[in-house]
Length: 260
Ligand code: ADP
Image (cartoon, rainbow, N blue to C red):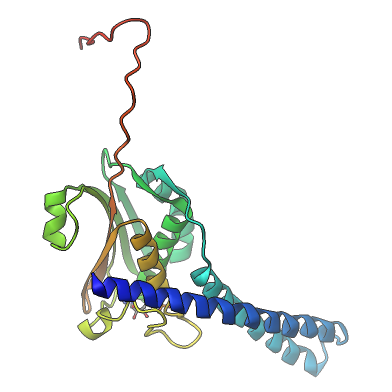
């Protein structure tokens, strides 16, 4: 628990710092992009300088995209948790996911039957699925398969996954890939902000710490299982939402048990 608290604190500090820097940095980048546009307008596309200026603008745009990532990470988004069906969200994002994963990756989404509702921020949950899927894709340079499955997990079953989980019913969302996997020394660091093994410009190291933050704010858990050369599975546990007692409403007389 202490480790979790330390992690939360660190995320907070990093988030604040990153947000401040990103904001100022973005202004500088917008100036570079703006002046590049002014210069471009003064040159013909056939001028030798034109391509150079395009390079400047292109790189500034790439930097701006990275900064946007940072801002998204640090933004104190007000959470808007609502009762939702994980399957509905998965159905909504599956087209986008397919496009994101590209042609060489098979996407298999399997939503179990009678899955319990959960209470979560839908946008944030989408973000979780996206981040995990992008990582899965990056772990499979030669293509492969991403499976997303959901299931109900009772309190007793949850303890078998991790005995530190509070006894409660959970909805489990598994995201597996058939990618390169990771060695233990990488696995212990993946939720750290800015930890990345990807080359400069490709990874920010914020994907999984964002996922971690969102899952925690939803009172959930995330576990990772990975085997080198075989693949990786992330398991997210979100607490089952139990509806508050509704006063019984009887319309038109007593309720009668219907015969089949
Ligand atoms: P980024 O994707 O920008 O590197 P993340 O926080 O999302 O940042 O991931 C951190 C690191 O965790 C990655 O650089 C990679 O080494 C490792 N990782 C994450 N997901 C997977 C996966 N599905 N398979 C293998 N390694 C992974």
